[in-house]
Amino acid sequence: METLQKKSLFWDVEEIDPERNERFVIERVLNFGDEEDFKWAIKYYSRGKIIKNLLDIKSLTKKSLLFWCKYFNINEKKCSIKQSTKKQSAFLKR
Image (tube, rainbow, N blue to C red; front, side, top):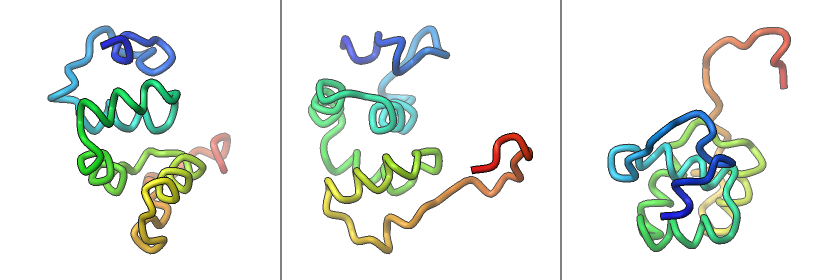
């Protein structure tokens, strides 16, 4: 499980359980992973689980969300940008 050892994906955690932290792992792979990480995720979780999580993850970047929705041919309305409702600091405006 080389993907789970990558600091470029999991820079802020020491150990990760791919079963218990499924959504977190999928989010990191979709946001920051490379082709090999994506292939690993498809093999480990399945295409269906990745799509289900993709539609529930609120912390994907806009770019990543739009890319993966096109990749998986998901209806545009289902892939509306779901940003956090937390008020952001003036320094973090998008």
